Length: 382
Image: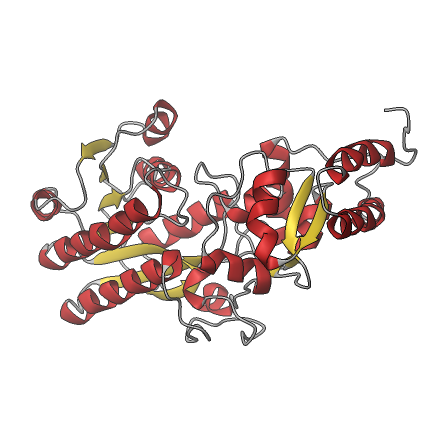
């Protein structure tokens, strides 16, 4: 972290909307340990889990639907000067599906932003958005900067949700120029309770990928996400920032480094292959997620380092490796074990798809050996 970066007056009283979720609950605990913070409110419509409650320590928890008209009064009475909106869903995999996610993301955020705009005590607003606002298409630049827009505007789903919420936040900022607004656009974070498409593709022994495409991916370690969020909350320079780890992997590289086999399938059969090959299945993969699995997305982080004053501790590769260790993902570490698993799956696949699966075995073994992820002597008797 660049301690020489310009900062604003440190937060004194902070409200974390979405305080029962992973990032929100952990942020609350971190804020309580900071000497300048005198009061922290965790606000959410559901109670935190026992684990998250322990993280939140002695913070005040307010069980409140963000759409409640009481929110403005609570912010004013508690003299809240900083509001962190950590309540956006980043996938459609939440209970209730797409309809519930959209209701929470759009309507919930509109009420939170309106309440902050009317509460005179609020002087800083932090939003956790995502890099999905840039979309994914074949016309994308090598890296998106914060000033760029999606080459193909999202027509729905999470990208449109986040793009809309960012617009509401900017509208509030125009009406209340005295509020410092910080928008953090983050890529996929592996290891959170909220599942991701990429995270699920790294778990099975054989993972479907779109034939003819190998998207570039960028990650962010959970601790880096929390550190960036804390930095923004405590008074870093406001603005819109891409927060992502250094380095890029392709999807097939990530799958192979997990010790597994990417299976190229035609786009029209991807959902079928996902349901057949994945233990949990990709729940109704949306159009924006299919585009991501085809084209990927990479963002430029120069502004994050130079203006926001933050540098992640983990690279993309290190973030992925940490996730693999923490999730207990087991690689297929011998050719014999690969052959046994492949043989079982081959029987379920059409001929051409089975041939592509077989071709991926040697490639996977070669890449694992190159990075030292296989023992020197492979035990074929396993």
